[in-house]
Length: 252
Image (cartoon, rainbow, N blue to C red; front, side, top):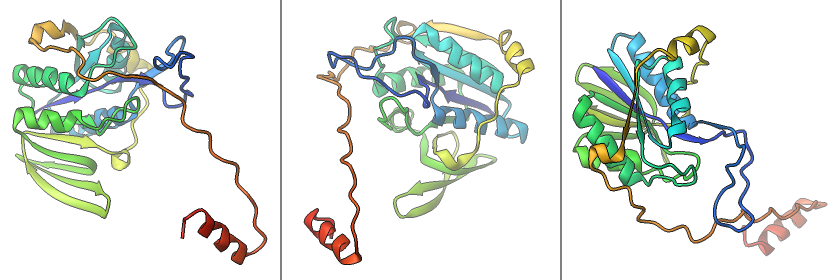
């Protein structure tokens, strides 16, 4: 079974994001970029499936700028077998929208015929949480979102999902789209020998036109701004005073 893992290049989660002075977007100059953390978890889970003998090949896919090669090399160093880069823009500030990404991934799936797609539940740059669901709709495949546990047995996958009310366990028929959550696993660090080996693993480069997908944006970002600063806290001298303050704030 092939496992397809989409990965995205985003600002490293340790970096404090800065908004441009003119509010036109986020400042990416000299900013460290890394693989989306949820996608890292998806890559790790694919590797574990292969180590357990339940997957034969792991294909990492990234859609965006040419610099996403670095992100794919990270996936290859972790343990992916090969990679596909779909260059969809030359501008690092141009974020390809989920529907366009899903359409390109659908075309890749038609070519590669994987048995399972593992993707992060969302990207930490736009938090849209939409690509996996759109891809499931386009393929007509079963889907399981927010996975915190995954077990593949033959042509079915048992997935424990993190939902508002707690945990939900479902069984889906393969092929399937599974979007992963933070508690599924802890991704491994790529060793130096594996980083060197990754340089020799195949990485195919294509573009959106190769798949006949129109990536014209459907959304327009009017402005970008910093979140409001949190108000300073206050000290209270008693429980009664605390209750009174909470009532004033409308919290009780």
